[in-house]
Image 1: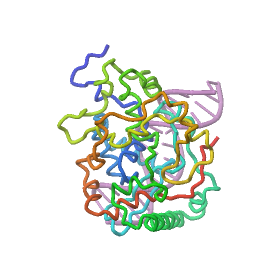
Image 2 (image 1 turned 90 degrees about the vertical axis):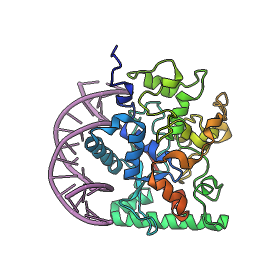
Image 3 (image 1 turned 120 degrees about the horizontal axis):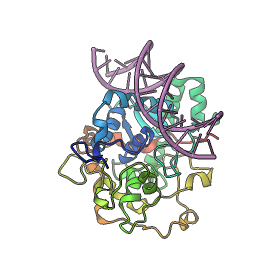
Image 4 (image 1 turned 30 degrees about the horizontal axis):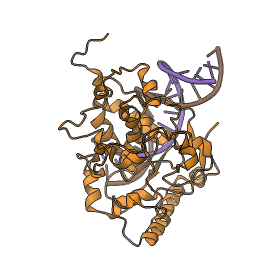
Length: 316
DNA sequence: CTCTGTTTAATGATGG
DNA sequence: CCATCATTAAACAGAG
């Protein structure tokens, strides 16, 4: 038993792949997309392990962003100054870690050539960007037309049918991941917990069940747990929504929970405790991006309009 | 120059 | 054991 000296569990490597971590970061923000630097920040804020050797893991993470089709690059708009593009999750990548392990996916997510984006990318990378932008514009316009408003950063987040981004939360959402093991005092947290308990220290106490996560509600800059925000209603681990459906709405918020598909999960809590009702803006208090989101309502709304009409599947 | 982003290659780790 | 996925290193180009 390793003596918990100065190097406590918090300094251990979290049981998540870079893909998981990146997906968490992206899902954690209301816009569902982040610039690279914000992804870094998210990870470093929550996982002390990644406050060291930044050169190494950030290079790896960048490699993952480029290499894996589950991440898509969304160009900045003129009103969104800054460096680099935004990164988002591919609408159809859904539950890549449905096996419960956040270290290794069942299959690598690959877009097919039927995917217009893939085709554009295959032909000319530059055209893919154009395609994305156009899809963006179309979606944003349609959303605007439907709502007749300017899509405020947070309100737009909860748009209904008009907005691609509804209330569904990716299985990647850190809220979901945390919820699986953190919520459920009774011990309903199965999948993630089991997969984690293998090779990672998990004490019985829920309060310390996340040793690798930093500052549980401490007076620090981040509040990893409480950031669950309004994900609660859908915070249940909805599995097999993706691989069962096959035909997914190719929209940022890809998967819709049909009554049938959730039926088997009815035993799980359908609402979450009060601490979830935080403002999404509190997600990253240290983030200038979040602050910018508030000041410029136009920008974040773009996040709602990730490229649509993308067809892709996990490669077999 | 630094930060992003892409790409190739080698190596480790894991699942079937 | 092999196929596949993940990690790491490194070279390189381009943008800001």
